[in-house]
Length: 132
Image 1 (tube, rainbow, N blue to C red):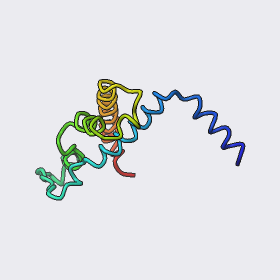
Image 2 (image 1 turned 45 degrees about the vertical axis):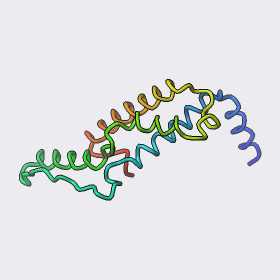
Image 3 (image 1 turned 180 degrees about the vertical axis):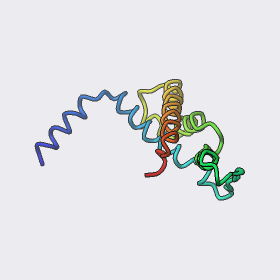
Image 4 (image 1 turned 90 degrees about the vertical axis):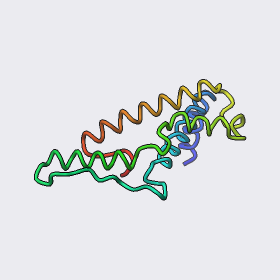
């Protein structure tokens, strides 16, 4: 057990402070993105599209559309909204001192693009990163 702890400590020491902040920023971003799903809001109502139950493609399209509605961002732009929340947080300088504001915005934007791309690929294979 002590040997494993020493190895983990050495790995953490090798990570630069900036990279540790990027890892923390990514965790905060993805958690907040998940919490901002439209399905989480009290007034959320799905708009069910017309479906031809005899056409499997129509059923799949409807399923994807319903999933997209539920998982879309409440305000429509997670990267801007989440980076603003992070930058305005009173503990921002304490938690993320090595990343300038412009870099925080850029990282959030990149994370959002990567997630949406991967989510689209996952949906094409009929699964999602949002749910297990």
